[in-house]
Amino acid sequence: GPILEVRELTFRYAARPQPAIRDLSFALEEGEMALMAGPSGCGKSTLLRALNGLIPRSYKGELRGTIRIGGHDPRAWPMARLSQQVGTLLQDPERQIVAADVLHDVAFGLENLGWPRAKILERVEEVLHALGIAHLRDRPTFQLSGGEKQRVALAGVLAMAPRILLLDEPLASLDPQSAQEALAVFRQLHREGHTILLVEHRVEDALQAGPRRVLYLEDGRLVFDGDPESFFERV
Ligand code: ADP
Ligand code: ADP
Image 1 (cartoon, rainbow, N blue to C red):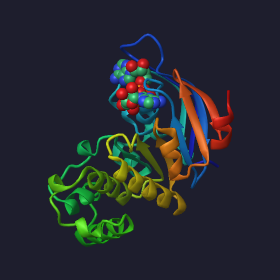
Image 2: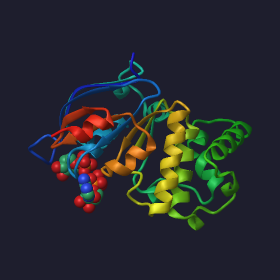
Image 3: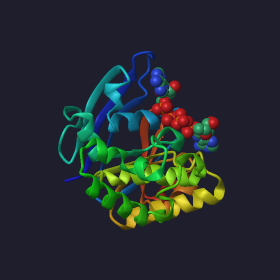
Image 4: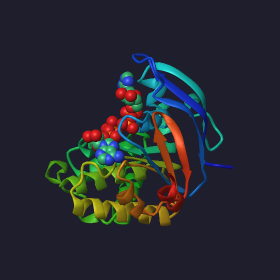
């Protein structure tokens, strides 16, 4: 069955009368990469919050419908378990960097899981190498460029080996050159078999990461679910 299954998901923030997402249903198979797009305010961030547990843990409101990750209800999991299942790359890498140097930043999640030091070091080296940033290992994080910060934040997420990777507007904070490099990394992760939901309103740019599926939201509703060619042919 699918890794991620969302069925008739509706969420209304306590402070607003209208739901931010309405009756969303879709599923992602293992290894699939989907682009979720739509105009500002259509509900992209809200869906991500529902998938990574911030809804209902931090955002209060009225939630209906179901989410299944590997067949299980993520609401039943403690946050530590959830972060091993769903890895989120935040829109602003500044908000994701937690440590003074790269090694400790990427190690942070594994330290919280109580991994032994040698195993952590091995895993961090492996992830940094896979993302082409092994040379940054001992650098202070404040010295990194925006693109490097995002890559380090991504390393910290991947170190946890999540079953699904959520990328929240990953191009928004990058200059054109860094955005091209980021797209190449996402393409590589897809080729390696990661299951990825790429949320990005810059559709044409994001398609360079190679998703074969577009999910388009308007006003909280899923109004298109299909391949990129059909997306551009729709009226
Ligand atoms: P949020 O951070 O709430 O997810 P968005 O990422 O949707 O907000 O929007 C970020 C910026 O991009 C906003 O200034 C918005 O006006 C602009 N924007 C949103 N959608 C589009 C689009 N389809 N084309 C061009 N600009 C957009
Ligand atoms: P997007 O990420 O596509 O820009 P959002 O999920 O941020 O869309 O927003 C969907 C709707 O929910 C918008 O009308 C937005 O104003 C509203 N919204 C977003 N966050 C909150 C919040 N914390 N409290 C109340 N309303 C919110």
